[in-house]
Each structure stands twice: as C-alpha cells, then as structure tokens.
Image (cartoon, rainbow, N blue to C red):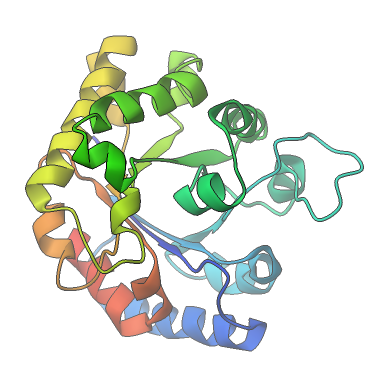
Length: 255
C-alpha cells in the first residue's frame, strides 16, 4: 500500500524563532485532531539551520524532518555544503533532491543528482526526488520525454530494493511559485506515466510501493481535487506550508 504524504518545503524562509512557532502551531493543530494518521506521513523541510532546533518538536509530533538538499560529495573541503552523513548523524530521514530551483538556479545536472541520490541511499536517507518540465517543453508536448530522461539519468540506476525507499515528486516548473497549478487531469496523466515507467523498469509491486507527490502551487483550494486522483499520493507544498492553518488543511485533505 502506497503511503500518503504531505511535505512542506519552507525554502529560504523564517527565522529560528518563526520556525519554532510555526512547528509548534502545527503540532497543536495535529494533536487536537482525533483522526488516526497511521497511513499518512507528514514532513517538514526547513533550512539546515532549523533542523536541530525543530528536532525536539518533531520527536513528540506526528511530523518528521527533511533536509532541502544534500551535497553530492561525501566529505572534504566544500565550504557551505552539508553531507548526507552529517544529516544521518542528526537522525534526519528524508532529503529533497533535485528541486527545480536547485536545477535552475544552481545548475544541478542529472549526473550530479545521481550522486546525491547514491549518497542519500548509502546513509539510509530517503530521497524526495523532484522531476518536472519547464513551460517550453510542455508547450512542445515533449514533457513525457523530458521527465523520463530525468528518471533515467538520476534514479533508474538504483536496485529494486533501493528505489523502494525513494519518494518521487512531480513538479511542473511552470507551476512553481506562479500561482498556476496543473489541472488534476494533467497531474494525474504525468503521475500515471511515471508509475508506468517504474513498473516497466522494476515491477508492478515496486510501482505500487512508491509514493508519487505533486508539487506546484498546491494550496487549500486545489489540494482535495489533486488528492482525489488515482496516482497522486500527496503533495510537496511550498508557500502554503508557511501558514499553519493552510498547511494543516492540506494535511487533512490527504486523510
């Protein structure tokens, strides 16, 4: 059975004090609700600075923590980088890898992301692997080929047992931070395509074990219609995850 997942990516937002307050507010909302969360995973991905300060709250809550990125190097003279081993030593279980902003702004290639995936897996960190197409690719009707190349070059080298620890997040680049959202039908079409490719590469069992999330201006108004689609297992949420009530509403829509 596929796990239902809602992950909040705080990006480069919130001071330490603000992050602690947001996490505490979420904890209060979650603890006041009587719904049982056993088949659902809630993830917060703050900046590196927040991870240790939020650990105590996470340990007594139903949400877990993820890093927004990891280095593609194991260790060494790489000032400003954070390694997978460092995150593992802090008991961080998830890491976002290949977010479109990292690809576009920091020029992260599919080959670099492959190294990040390998280091995450080697350190028992579950990657949240992001893939998705820019607007010009969508307009040229080549989005399937574009996403398949991302999967082939960064992810599909893994063994079957390894890829079962990966979460895939489809995020059409043209819908991130723009207020635009892919229609539920557009999102479902790509999610179904990705799951089919996992099945062809590995097995039906593995395809049914992997959670595939949608990311792209998800908010309380759009979440429910997206979650009703057969192959959409949750969301990677940006701006809406910075408002406790909005993020909580999205969390409840996945139940």
